[in-house]
Each structure stands twice: as structure tokens, then as C-alpha cells.
Image 1: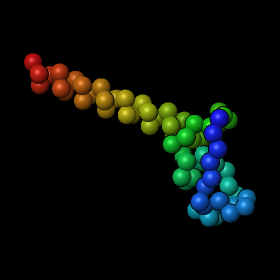
Image 2 (image 1 turned 90 degrees about the horizontal axis):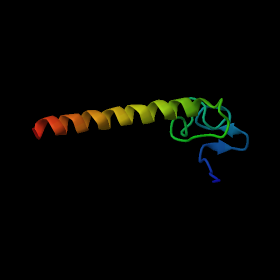
Image 3 (image 1 turned 60 degrees about the horizontal axis):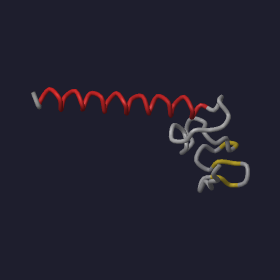
Image 4 (image 1 turned 30 degrees about the vertical axis):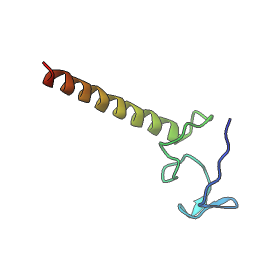
Length: 70
């Protein structure tokens, strides 16, 4: 378990989004960068897409390296 502190949070408000602080929502600095315990947090799906994209790029790079080595 970990803790964090956000430089944009002022009490219950987010200075960045100018609304109530809801970590992991679209526009939050944590969006797509952190996995949240609440499965309904939008960040979780964005993180999953980000990791899939990264894996696909790595696979393409490996294929390209393998082809150039033949």
C-alpha cells in the first residue's frame, strides 16, 4: 500500500481541473499512470491501454531487430 500527495490538491478541490479532487479522472495528473483499487476509476482502463501500446511497440521492435539480423 502506498500514499501520495498531489501538488494540485487544495483541500477538496483540484487547482488543475478547477473542480472537486477525484484522483484518476481524465485530466488528473495520475490519469493513465496509476492503478487504483476502485475498478471503476477511469485511470485503470487508460493504464491498461498504455501498457498494451507499450508492449505492442516492444514486439514490433523485436520483430524488426530479428528481421535485420537474418
